[in-house]
Image (tube, rainbow, N blue to C red; front, top):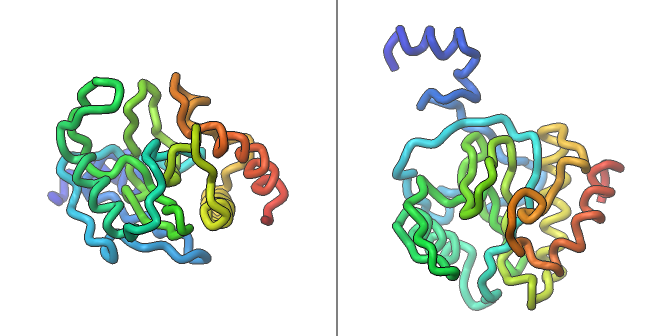
Amino acid sequence: MSKKKQVLCLSLGLLLFGACQSAKTVSLPKVIPVVTRAQWGAMNPVLPMKTHVPQKITIHHTATKQNASRTVQEKLKSLQKFSMERSPLSDGRIKEPWADVPYHFYIAVDGTIGEGRQLQYVGDSNTPYDPTGHVLIVLEGNFQNEKVSEAQLQSLKSLTLAVAKRWKISGDNISGHKDNATTACPGEDLYQLLPQLREMVNRGSI
């Protein structure tokens, strides 16, 4: 980075959380095991991304059937490939390429947590809401007709509490995707667990 650009970043307070490409990596919560991008073999983002400060937690589902026969590494590689391509959606719309995986965390059916998009970057959505400030957590499954596994629930609780403590996020700032846009996501079985997550975060323990 040029000296002029460094000065600009510093003067705007953006060296850590701003729009400059040298944005510092935000560390993952250390109290829970996460399969990192390096461990699952993530490719580098293909487009520029905007940085942000996490202020909320928003829960999603993949809307695809749970599949215990594939590893989280395989699932995340597949999701990243889909994300980076111009792809058809289930409702017939065409999704333009995203820079990377849209979510910050992925929780597989066996409870394994994978790192998605790096936390310092704003996620993406197929729906018209601004996810700036939102930590996006997605669970594998279609919870309109499937159940959240016990392993997923325990991982969701641990991850949500760790992220909330790390960023001082209150339970009032935990929502489902459909609280922010017109969508069925995260599915009814997962959505009905959100009051439990809010209460857990507000008391500070599982």
